[in-house]
Length: 328
Image (cartoon, rainbow, N blue to C red; front, side):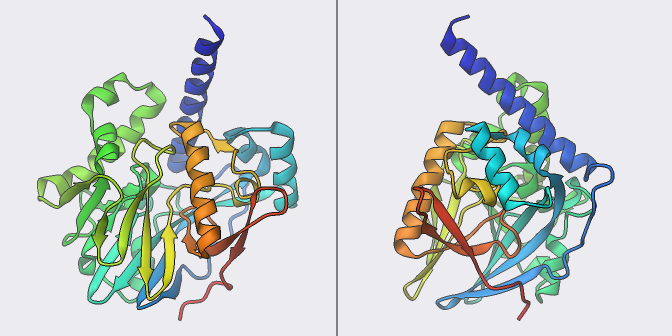
């Protein structure tokens, strides 16, 4: 096998390894002996012009920095140094956030968390939605950044639609990939679970006529635009919320490990379908967010997952989180 073939084989093995670890964590939960500190609050409200954006925590998994390091790809010495500096107690929480947009009379949920697919410390989106003062039946639309299980698992309540009146929106490229039986059949065993989860969670909405596809960077609702950020998955997107000169980009899985990937956006993770494209998308959105002083909402940033980014002295970026979590 030539060098290019070796590199392709190594990337494939890394993706398979990452997917296997992802679903091992989802199925089995925390490593034996890991300390768990439940989140005291799982709701955080922030105004973006006339729009309210509400973080709904889905929960977290606890990891050691050694476990996290195994998933990250890049300059090994720098990765380990950044992890040690950011997490001196050698543990970190791998968090999951969803975001509820209350725009006028319309309720839009961005991603749905794990539902019943995660560990006992996850699956809290519905509970926190109710804690915020809403019922699942009030959600009008659900926008999916991508179809990994920790973003679509919460679409189901048992075998029924968790959001019975909502229409689900996803990028056509994402749906064409994960909902394809041919792609599932051709995928390695470690990736099968992702295809199965996407099909299981979205089929009830498809059958009910409550599933819509979009392409390109288009407006899905007044003041809310989809922005293609392909790489983490084939059709990964962000959603930009703009109102009265203020903007927040809900960017899905652009950053998984804040202590590493803001400082060095070249660092990728084993879950990325296309690691070079994922790194390019991260550089691109970080530059735009910093230049325009956008707020950002990240699925895997520590609760409440909201803050701003600034250019760093070393060529990377610095994350400035919002104020301490509070449910107003």
